[in-house]
Image (cartoon, rainbow, N blue to C red; front, side, top):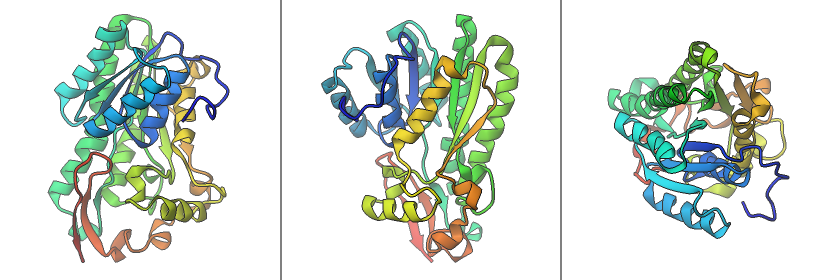
Length: 297
C-alpha cells in the first residue's frame, strides 16, 4: 500500500493503539498499514522477524515512524502474547484494539494420516493463540475502564464442511465460538468481540510460492470475479476497530466474494490437497519462515 492507492481516509482510529498478531505479512500486514493510515499506533506481533523488519522499513518510509513497533511473538506462548499487549500500553499509553490474526495452514491431508503432533501445532496457533489474545486483551481493557475492540480471524472453514482442512476447520470453528462467548461475557464492560471469516485471500500463507496461479485459481473458485486481497480483510477489521461498529459484538463477518453462498466444495476445486483424495499429508507453517513438514501419499 502506498499513499497514492490508499482508500479515502477519515482518520477513524486517530489516537487509538492496536496490537495486530501475524501483522508482518498477508492480511495482517495490510491491516497494519491501513490502521496506521487511519491514525492508529500499532504494535506488530509476529513470529517471523525477517518480514517484521521489512514491514518496519516500509512503514517508516511511508512516514509512520514513531507509531509502529515490532515484537517477535509466538502466539502459542502465553508470556509472548501478554508481553506484546503490554508493550502497547508501555509504548503508547493504552490498548484499544487487539486483532488476533496470526495463523498457519497447519495440518493437511486425509484425517487418517493426521498426526497428533500436527493437530496440536494447528490448535496451538489458531485456537489457543486467539484465546490468549482475548484473555490478556480483556484484562488490560477492563483495567483501563474505557472499553475496546477485540477482533479475531476465523475463516469460512468454520461455517461448513468441505471449506478447509479438517483440523484447520475445527480450530476456526473454535474461534467463532470463543468470539460469541467472549462477546457476551465482556459486553457489560463495553469490550466488543467480533470475528472475520475470510474466504480465499491471496496471501503468502495461501499462495505456496505461486502467487499468479493462486490468484487465478481463487478468482475461478468464487462468484466474485476478482481474487480476495489482504486489503479486503483490512477494511473489515477497520469497521470492527472503529466506532462505526459500536453496537456490533459477537458477530462473525464473512468476507469471501460469495464463496460461502455458492458452496465452498474445496475437495472438488482443489482435489490434490483436500479431503480423502489428497496426495500429501503433514503440517504447513504459513509465513512463519519455518519449513512445512509434508509427506507424499
